[in-house]
Image (cartoon, rainbow over all chains, first blue to last red; front, side, top):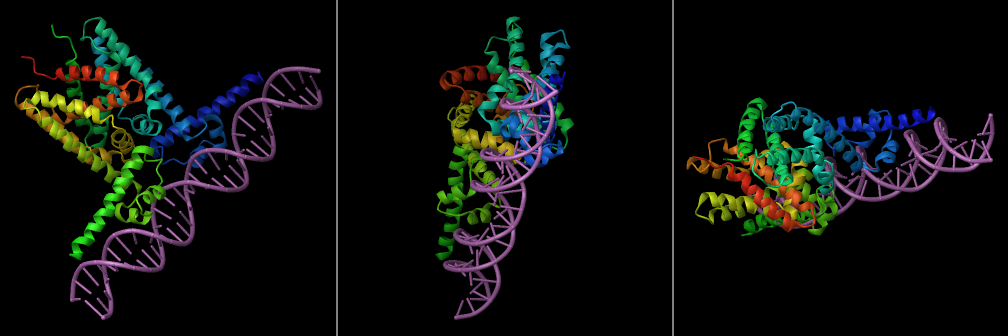
Length: 197
Length: 197
DNA sequence: GCTAATGCATACGCAGCGTATGCCAGTGAT
DNA sequence: ATCACTGGCATACGCTGCGTATGCATTAGC
């Protein structure tokens, strides 16, 4: 049983590091967080960090992937909450927009990770959310709800539009009003995808 | 005459700094460029830098604004090259997509600047390109080519979609094929904005 | 022509990343 | 049960690089 306890301890420190890093990155930003001070806040030192994640970028990647996985789970639940696929799709997009307003997500996943990790990140991590979205689009196409097209690309386009909109909402003083306007215009844009007939 | 020569010298050093920073940021990224080495490549020292731009972020802002202004000029020329507003609009979007593939633009304007400068940048600088796009959308709405909506928001949505698509194109091995696919799907998305009647 | 101001260089301090080294606990074999 | 050993984590060091304070030279105003 010590065997289990041992690996549990290891996973616990990994978890503590990711958790603390998440808070630090979210509040101070990637560049603004000191490895010394944030590891101290988790009751550890940089030794643990470099052992588990190699370097600062490795840590950011791990954090970003964690958050992305959580987002995907939350979005999946929302998407499936409506039996109508098209409406589930719209709900999902709206929920994604809301999530993109959360400071932690906005700062870590949407701003810092693409800049710091570059293409390596965009390919690997955000794909959870993106591939899920592409699957939904595939189903919508298969059912003839929207016109044929490349689901992966359209997923990217939608994702980009929503992210940009979320950043815009976040930069103003009246987020609620902006959110409502954006939601209307997003729905218009998405409705343009629908098959006409 | 010395008066003119004097201010010319000053503008020259400013220009040299921005030019060198542009190359360095584009190649090494913001975080990867050392203020010492890059100023040396311009035949100057950090003294000149901090005198003109205050700090590293100030320099990045200046560089980003410079590039953005150039982009806006190039895009304006392309937009007006076609007398038909809708086609001019499509040309512009396609050209923007191409521009977003240029390493310098992608790295500095699309990746690093939003991350490093945050909301301060998204508001101030990229607005040149965005307000121009919004104006075009306004005209399209006024002429009944596309349905009514908030031009500023739709401009953001389109911008975000194109940026995200460009990043995706840039991360693969066969950019040409990807570009063609993206262009098709973008045109589809944009066509969805058109008024039905 | 003398002084004030400005453009820019030099010199310094300090924070922070990464690595090399060391220690201790837990693991597996005899 | 003991002992060698692997692996998790801490400590210590060096180096890079940002920002600031100071200094010098040239130019602008009176």
